[in-house]
Image (cartoon, rainbow, N blue to C red):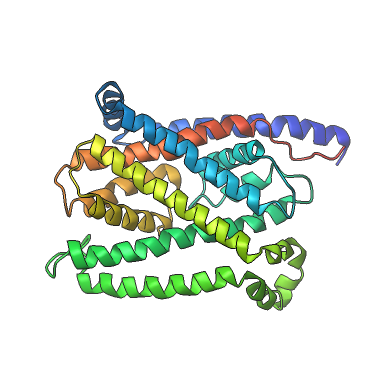
Length: 329
């Protein structure tokens, strides 16, 4: 590829992605059936006595993505040291691209696109560790929350979405077993990779994954603790919005139900723009066990979707403008 072609692509790809992502986000927001009512209620809350809670939720969103940027910075320290600001920009850009892919699978690819030539594939591989840490935090807490839900909220005659309590119990046991195996794999990455690269097909590409072996136990624990902090922020944000929209619920019940909701959202294949409908439906099923304020449940779900996903995705489209696929002169 000629130098002129590389230069042309560098200056075209960013604006093209920006236009496509901006239009996609706008179009997908416009298609949401409850978004107009939800937005009106959110703006009314901004003008009411609860506006400080919403401001706090927005500030927690910035903290949330800041922690994710710190995690990304830590994951790359053995490959390409980057500044916190650089990490924050690439994380938001990843959010804007991940918004249009199933379960945000495009997010690590977009993040890695900001790295130097030769480091991008390895960057995608390193993102696996951060994702594993977040999955552990989400599923482990949710497994205990599901146990609390089954023992303290549900009774023998109740179910969740038509699923009998016996099936919920069986699923709970499977979750505990599965997350135990996943935690073992996380803390034994070096041994796990040593086994995987014995596979002939994988062995041909071991160069791209060898940096996974460089993570020390201290690094893994730090990533995991940061993931638990992010998870706690999610819970606090959701609970605050539930109180803003008058969903009366005890904080421990809210913690359990929000945790189960987050677990279900993490395992159900979705695209972020379609996630609002799923969030609303799951919110009605779960929070309907303890409250009758259906409108408040749906609006709280929409508020979290707008603040945690849409606002960062919009900001990320701006950073996409600066992406360069070819950096070598």
